Length: 441
Image 1 (tube, helix red, strand yellow):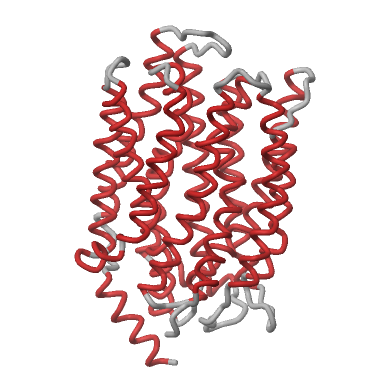
Image 2: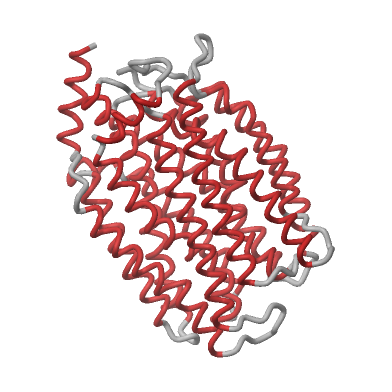
């Protein structure tokens, strides 16, 4: 298999930088915006996030079917969809501009705008994710693409953590901050999507250009590694999303140290960059599944430290959050490599290369996890009696924030480890079936 050039690697990473301008902004700040700026109650906001993500899971699956049935002889199956990346970015501007109207209309507006973003994002994100399997079958090259994707998403997350989060805690006009942010992201992100579509090339052709529903179902029935990975992903992403959604509340209302947000953004950058470079080494030695499991166990340990750390011992709480970051970055990098492996497994079992629906199912479970994670944090705030705008939260609210930021993620990630026990597609097994597929062609 031809080694991918630098432009293809960088271009693929640029695509996730654009993705994160949509998804990371929502994961990190949408709940805060709804509760503290738009004036939507915590319970209502949590319900909205869960409903929207469930809807998003179905739109992902529909997008996967569309992608599997689409094929352009000139541009391929996936790249043409990236041209429409500007649509969810523009809709994101509307999401962070809830009008000051009566509560029922305000909530209706929030449901409509965020639902439209979820729909448009699926039609861009699903084909983007499928590009990995179409660009190369080489495990090393897929690891490079996974690392580039992680770095791309991280770059946007770093901007949000370094520059945006401190502004939100500084007493400025939060609505104006989000206006400038979403407008800038719409312009920059659109250009990044075009760059991705131009720089990346689809080199691995599908065994069937347009796949029927019957072929799709047949391929999914025998793809047990995909099922295990998706089930594990729901729990992992729910836990990680809860951590992200609760982090601002934890730093502000538990530690009283919002100024630590840039520090945590910096550690996230360092950890992810280091893992993107170093990950192939432990994977080559122990295999993706073993490293994935270790990453999950680190997440459990980090979450418990965050939950139990005394409010006055800031260094211990930060250490727990850093360990959780290490876990999340490890699992994220390996997830994108594992899903590409399940494509070959399905083709090996059925003779049909189903890419769109495989990625769509994983994306759908991740969207469910994002919704569940954000929703659980919102429900925890409501249960604890969180009071928007209060200088100091009551003890039950503080305990609810602690549980949402630490205990809940720890339990969910540990449960994901148990599910991954049933993932039997080892790296050796994958290499054998890829060789068999190449002999068939």
